[in-house]
Amino acid sequence: MRPPLRTLERARMVPSVRRLGSFPVISANPNLKRAKMEIGVSFPTTSIGHDSGAVREFVQTIEDLGYSHIRILDHVVGTDPEKHPEVPEFYYTHESVIREPFTLMAYIAGFTNKIELVTGIIILPQRQTVLVAKQAAEVDVLSGGRLRLGIGVGWNPVEFTALGENFGNRGRRIEEQVEVLRLLWTNDTVEFHGRWHHIESAGINPLPVQRPIPIWMGAGAPGMPVGPNRVLERVGRLADGYFPLCEAGDTARTLIDTVKRYAKEAGRNPDDLKIEGRIELNGTPEDWKTALTAWQDLGADFVSIGTARAPFTTPDEHIQAIKTFQDII
Image (cartoon, rainbow, N blue to C red; front, side, top):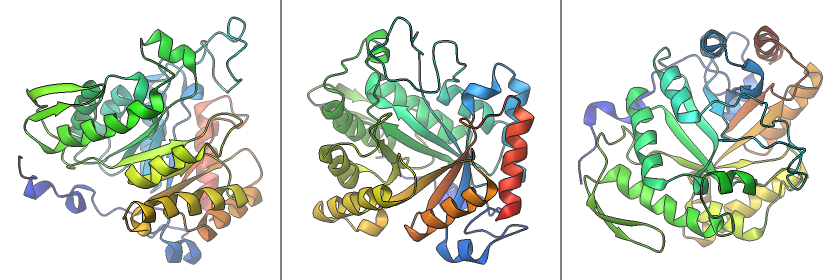
């Protein structure tokens, strides 16, 4: 096993930065300091469009404002709703621009130096595991150890068919995928023979700065935010952190309590399983404050704010909403 780069420890690779939440900001709310929440932004992928300059302006603005991270979703293909009525309606189709997360994060790493890069989430079972290990390691190196890899099993069978992967066994495969990722990120070479993966004395190079890269899990699908208990058990047993795919409230509390219980049953310290909530900026500023307080009360470690589902039509409108959020807290 190759030893970690001593000069690239995570505590040093993520520089001290004026962040929202647990870090001081211009208009810091003392309650947020006490809760030690870090606040990031979900990238409005379907709204930015093809303009790479707008991508750069958006990300640089949120870093300059002191937000802690940017969260990027993953869909390789969009479906034509007229041809696929069986697919649940969502806020994107085949006509929506959805950036490839690893490529986008490599681009962002080149003009930022503080903000954490978060996939929220990579649909891991529809991707080739060793290639994901390589791509994630490269982004982690390019960014100086700023990657947090959020993963999930996905919900759209059309994507799996297009990518040549089995939709029916995705839950079972993701567990082996996580094992393979962590082995590849922490060893020069790997010998692994599982049900779906066979690696014979091979490894990736470069290895990531973080060994291993943190793996978070999201659970749920459109209209089904809770997910079956086997999904939550997997989160509690394997993940470094959890994205509850719902609003702050009773459902979120149940989900968090459940994954923490499963973590304890797996012999883990439940406090080591971190939580990130999400707030959609499609209501009033007072609604945003209420939601932020609710996630704080639930003990969330991170919150990301999203503008993709708000009625904005230009990148400037998304940026202004994010600036307004900072002002109200």
